[in-house]
Length: 431
Image (cartoon, rainbow, N blue to C red; front, side, top):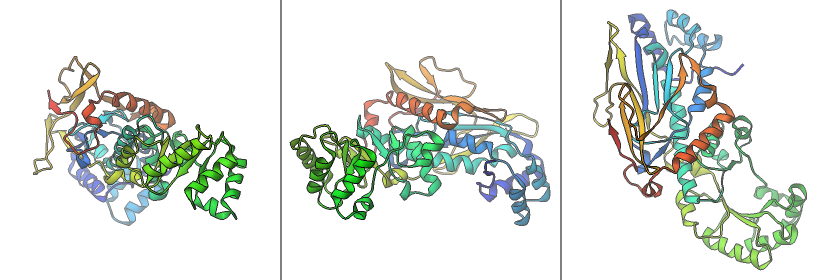
């Protein structure tokens, strides 16, 4: 049985639940919306990610004996609320953007319709998952665009929380990376894994030559040899001598990468290894990758910058109540009016208008408005009356999200592909 996720929440979610059960408002139907008021860092688009993970965590959002005992012992809620939580199962509905979809300010990424009691305690879990995964996916998409057709490997596990590392590898794969070094991401989510050897492997042996010979004997001629432990030019010479003309690749993890890559390519070609690939690592981000576009580099490995969202580790998404039933059962829109933190009341739907296969604007409108005829529907059902759409979960869900992302990314106008800070590539309009 999977561990409960019910206490992955802030205390005030449960104190609000407790008070609402006391005054009777807990059972009012409500609509909560998860959205972003702006894009982090002046980026031109965002990538929605984490929906498949969230659905799996929702399956395990149960209050077992250990969770209930903690709430009792810490006097977080009343005994009546503890009894209510004994049988808690989310029974509402969730609609939202598909995982891998692009989003813009005001996009209703998730819409949760349920009783207040059902919906309010999901706030922290939903935000923690989508804020993290969307930040990583957005950074990964920018790196993927900068890399063009060259493969990208995610290598940031040692720079992240152990569970965050797995989630980051998953999000990066959805947004265009081709592999990860993280084995748990491979096992759990079906992300292709890769990896050969680190500098410690070379340092372990009495000579670089011994290390290379052992690696080739173990992994075959198609392996990639790390050539910068000592002297790069000498490392390349030894790699070719030992691996022969069918040596798969060399990896460079230091130095002035554009200059070093050019020198290594020239040396490989001079030695007859025209098909030996060059992989570069060493603290890359989207800007460094773009700077290497004209260099003879075949693939990239990215670590720290990716798993920290390339400077923006959260997507800045919020979860707000936008509609509720009043005491008579009538639906009324509600909205926050605070300066710079306002929201728009009412349940919404969203569409993306296309002209000749290129997106031109994001349309956010009341849920009961007629769908535009020249636009793509963005909102789909993820949970219906407590029943979760299993197609969005697991490795199959990750593959589907990746395919969807790469498809819809082709809808972006050219100006969206630039890395410089600017306004969102698509305006968000009301209909």
